[in-house]
Length: 426
Image 1 (spheres, rainbow, N blue to C red):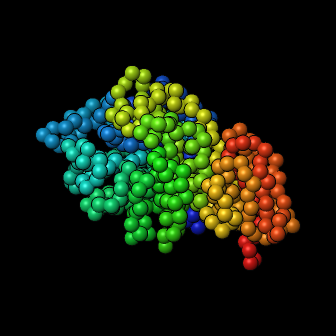
Image 2: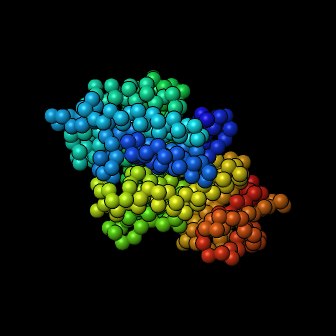
Image 3: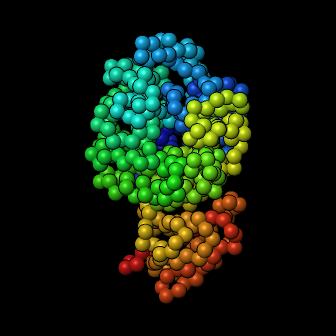
């Protein structure tokens, strides 16, 4: 169960074969998940089709449920790793051993931004910032402890990537991981407003781009916008939206919570736009490993989490599992967004094409769509009813040299897969 880069550097291989990485977000499982709870959760996600898990090695102080353990304490305004709960690190290894036994690849965030100087998180929890020496010692210990689980390393956590001091610290950590675990993949995790500087994005301190389209006002358009930004870099890399909107998370100052339909839209929009190497999924209460009656540090921002066992049953997890099944079955890993494929229309539909010429169109609303291109004699059109999680019967016609996809006869969002549509001019 080892992940690597495809020769094209556009998608990922799992044990040498193309595969879609689907990660459940369990940031706070270390020090949070009890053994019976954890085994039940792993079995649920394994059956659904997840194959990776997102962890933060250290607690996320500003987004934390009150029942989780800590590996450190604050002594004289400085982190002291010898003063925390001694069970934390053994518990982390127990959690990872069970995850690997169930077929999951751990994705480990080394430094959530709270622990790095120059970040917005450092301003919230200044006593948690580590100096360079302490950071290097912690990273060496973490790699020595966890590399045997063959993880994917995530250098940064929720960072704006706009501070030179912070970027230098993350870069030093990435270089250290390269030296200590040269065969394991590295990525970064950033905020929805972040744009990794081109010299860093094109450099050697990451293997694939890990985006966060996030949970705020632009949750529906940022998946394609961020993907286009990174696809335009000089160096081709796989792209994964590690954090689209979390199901059940509060948004817009308490006026709404993100639904399964929101998660589908953000997820499919990013995949079709070119973030087709994988996807992260989060349920509000699972990621913080929240238990009934506990406090939550960011309730005023995100709303109270649901108990983790309740949130684990949210329907969006099955929706994103379908994303993986479709991408793998239809061989869509190399999708690249193509804005010229769709005749202008206002619904927010997006289209992309694989290197083999397979076209995918995500339609968030049930309207007819027109595709530019030359239809071959063997044109094939398939459609999936994503809310019902099943294939449907596609209807289409040729109109003035274009392909007209008829309005589907179901009211929700749809994914079309088209074979035999050549670009205009070919």
